[in-house]
Image 1 (cartoon, helix red, strand yellow):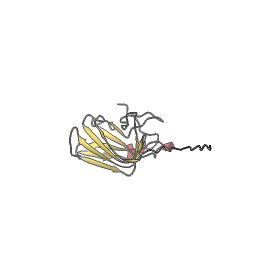
Image 2 (cartoon, rainbow, N blue to C red):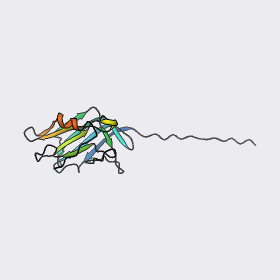
Image 3 (cartoon, helix red, strand yellow):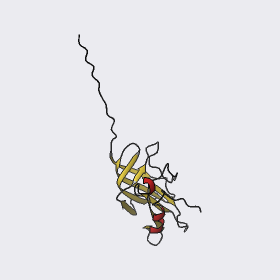
Image 4 (tube, helix red, strand yellow):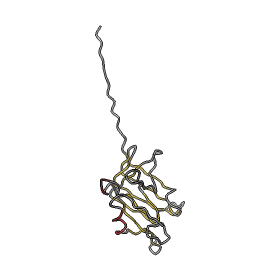
Length: 153
């Protein structure tokens, strides 16, 4: 009797697909929906749309489109928010009063363009007059080096 040994190699492949996340806990005043081009089990990246809604609202008052982003997912499969651990965990969205005017501003991850391939951020300041977030080049330049900066109020 001849014995034939057959070995089967199973390749593990991560499913990469478009994903939408709803962030209800990033801010006291607004909710955020993120549509990102591709995701696997740990990260999402590619083109992204960040939609901002008044808390509990159903129509966005502003949508910011970025050509790239980097979304690090936590153990629960949800994006990290308001986390700035240098060389470790970084959020896709950081909310804070970055210019000390008493209004919440946002920093959005625009990919891995910082020093050493770390996440980089575009900073948008809240404008009461415009009723939306306005891109801020000087603060964005701070978010292009060693990931998101922290603010000491």
